[in-house]
Length: 427
Image (cartoon, rainbow, N blue to C red; front, side):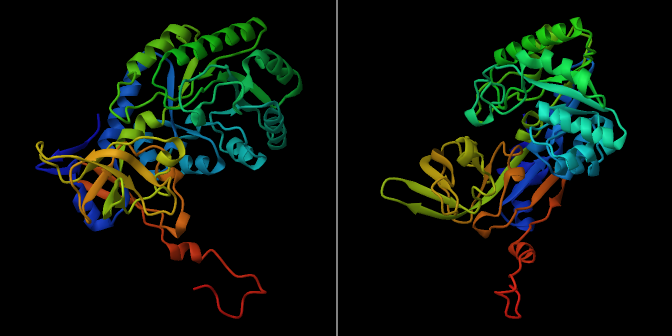
């Protein structure tokens, strides 16, 4: 469920007509719904009732400060995967004790910032990283709280580019080596306290059985480590629960929580969850304007002013997003099959092929739905295009929460070398 609905023939974000935002902000832009963010968080939180659970929003899915702060006000922590995301979470008001730091390539400066901030835990993904955490913690006179991320070798049955729990993936330490690594760490890493395990097998999972298999494997590792005297009191179960991009049925948070309870709910561990897409995916849309309608030899193209640099998912993952007009079509209005494409000089700059749309014309507004996750955070300036605005709606109000960042800003950060500079700069 989201809060983007037709009211009196016009698509609205909560109580605000999207056409009004477009007239004020210009297209393309991202639009997020506060009510949807809050609802999705509360539904997930309610599903975990009775468990000792901490919900850490996955900042990599949407890093907008206003989005993070909206969720932090509900009690959400943050899962971060870079020093930049750590800074964002802190700037948005997330308490440091509710921040976990994941990712396979943390640098020593990033580890240092995390330890100085006294975050909840660092999810260590390799033995070299464990040694780096030990070095930095020793230098700072701190004892680092660490969870060891294990790779359970479980197929998530999702897109190959977003699966993370197989042995050929770069993430985590092979589950069969967890005992060896923890034993060595207890002997050789005096500045590290391994307090738990972490696991994350992929993103956009629409089947609960891979979760069950991974969590059962985690349970086995916990039993083995505890038998050897290790103190394992925390389990970070990651995120990854999928959402219905194309209207297909997906498991509910309640169904997911049932699997959690059945597999690890009796271990006496505090559980960390890292939902991202589940919270913010349906809470955002990308609003775009039709530039041209072009009839090719075999296809009709609807060319819009948004492009793959604004929303990369279709080009990167062959992802499908529902696309609807802002002006509500008549139920009896005939549909035609079109390709919705952007202006970037790549054939991959395509949002939909063979999409059934009512007739549209230049100047019409379209909405690409379920674009709140992995949209703005993955955008770029390819083809020297702007970074587009982000807008947050609450009830009958809206605010620009990231201004358009145009070409001049980027030109101002470039300069000629001395051998090309004839006394004139690039502006």
